[in-house]
Image (cartoon, rainbow, N blue to C red):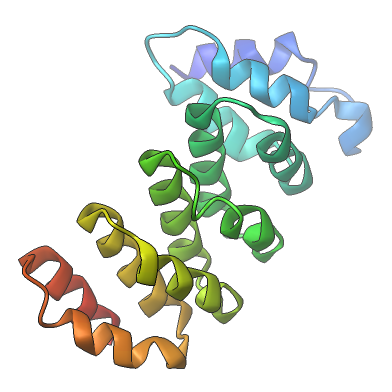
Length: 173
């Protein structure tokens, strides 16, 4: 897997050379999208390589440029793993996307970032979300954000039918 990751880096010129990002050939947003959308049986080398080499601004721009929901979801995942607060606006704009997986990955990325700035957006989506599976992710993200105005809504979720949702609400309080 790591040798494939090394090969990916060499293909776009990102390994070796000068230490400056531009000179090292770090992937641009279009290259990031191409790497994610290539047909492969094993995403791990791509995932590891992008986590190590792609700069946050390129990941954010790729998220804005990507058309496929699956690609956007993958980028949300990467941005969440990087925990950059600069990604919050790009992630919050995907919370109400029609694709459930994308909404969920955006909420989970915001959970990892742990910023109160995301709180109002997470709460707004929680109030209109119809899928219990995503409500649990939103509840966890609200807990991680520390957004105090969400407390009454999280308390209300303690009476939810879903045990998982009740547990996530309890954890978030």
